[in-house]
Image (tube, rainbow, N blue to C red; front, side, top):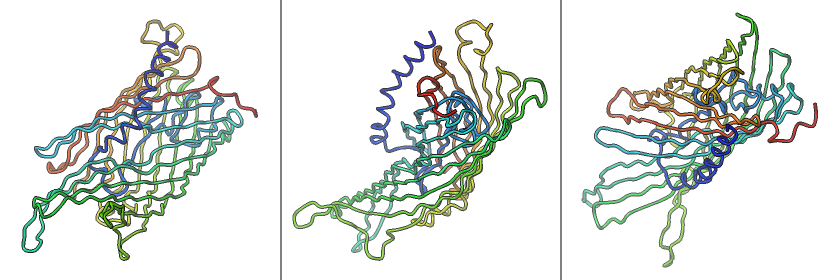
Length: 432
């Protein structure tokens, strides 16, 4: 029964995964706040318990990948893989103006292979770091040849920063594990600008702006574990992950179509004195978590995330760089595993459940106001009856905004789905 439900879920999600890439190209809207600098930072929730709303830096599951802490790649006996999809609906309000937006994206692909079981593991993966999807409109006026001309400026943005990662995790003993990963960052930020004027003497003007660049980054992880600390059979775990600051060398292109010799050609609009090259510096990031397992049925989590965006750099526009501020995200959650009770009966005892809440102080200072986010989470895990694979489904509802009523308030509803593959889905490790 459970295996059939898992198969149905996988095949139902497969078209959605393919459609997600096409939908993101068609829908260029997301959070209005993502227009600042290199976009809003993204959080990858735990692949096996996204309903907690936490990254899982201190959470270990032998059948599920861990993206938050490289130290956990060496703690495990099975090959594991994960593919995650995020679907989000956002309602934005600013005064009397309202808008609704949707976002679909594949947010994680990761594979962990044990080189030596329960000792040394290799991980490779691809994950997004930031996203900048928005659509903005601004009205203005100018004077030309003693004529007052009003105009409407529309800006649509897409892209963000992504990273491809490879690293190793090593378990020193039954209580301590460490890990390291190298990340190759690549950024692509696209802006489409359009100006429409109320005077027929001025035609519409459009141009494309694109920022691209790459850089190398590093991160380190530590995992500590101790059992039977308060009671017999309990388990305590602490996890730590740190991303070092990473600098990306960027290039800037501004192009548009112009009539040249009676032919419509794409031309470079940047002059010799224009800024063509610059730097994006991603900030220092520190993530720590604590996990307590009082019994085999319950797991409790707490996490703290600190990102030093106040020290980040975006040299293409100083005003936007000055809007960046340090970000803190705090959260807690729990997991419930009734299926681990051999005597449990009933349909609902065959799943795993999770829930949590988080508070995010934001990474922006907009007009002297901070942009906070409060999010509630809940999740359901569908387990395979024949293999160790599973499908994790997480729901979340968030509220983002500032105390100043003139800023944009956003209401967010989302769904995260992760397909977790383990055990016989992959070839067993060669070296033991």
